[in-house]
Length: 419
Image (tube, rainbow, N blue to C red; front, side, top):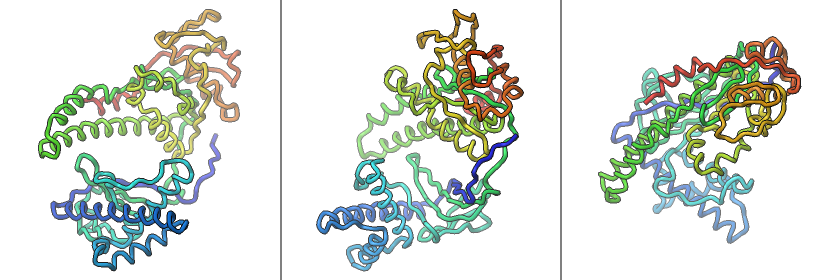
């Protein structure tokens, strides 16, 4: 039993590492970011004025030549203080911003302010790992200490240095891997439907569920307190910067714990289920329209879960089926009849066939039944683990209600992510 995926010959993979620059190196890093910000604004102004005066579009090569001419002048000699390829990457960023605008995917490019640029990139050269991977050499910066916690597989193409709001420095490498290096094979054989919610983060059609972690809710009081303290400090003072840093670290902690939880959960799912049925959460808009649920929806991060599950599925060669979300909760999973119920009603009780079960579990089974027939390779044997016997015909489905059980891997994640 296998899946015929069309595998890419080469795949880009990003590796992220923490770096610890010295005070002098940190000054140079900030100066390089400042040069990039200035170069971006100069290049953007040049593109706008050139089109306004001559009706000519500017290419990446035109910008590179313009930077070279400017660097030879005394007024703009500071452009020569950074590696030449860093300026070439600034040209690429300007062109990417215009391309997004022309494709109507973003607004017109804006000039960058003081904190709008936080990174710079070496596209091809100007960097290398030294001292047995304990340090990284950055052109114009020097040898910077790096925490090389995992090896890089593949050929390194680019290196990006960036600084976050918590005053932490990172470096990310883009490596090109062959399909033999990147793709892995999942040994899973089961098919499952997943219902996403706010009470429980997700419920599987085989009865397992993952409780909502409430990462933001648990820290909400502390964040409000830190935010009030920051607002009371005088603008521009050192105390305000210290308060801002404490607030940023609290937000970063939430982000890191949520990210760790989602990666581990997605990895577990693709290693245990060959085909996963999921609601089309892009079309879920009733949560954001309800102001009382907006914060809870933000906290669960469904879109982040979906994107990471798609990545893991792509890597482990499993399938994800996005099904229509309409009436997955209202329809009965056994007889198919519509049983109208309010969002506050957490139990599905069908007056037609008499089945009683959790409403989210009912929705998960309906999602499983909506997975396309061609993806159900051997559903009678694989779905037996969930007590479900169906081939897409919901009217003839026989459901043996599985016991609601916490997912074991999720229990470990909860302990790791608990405050």
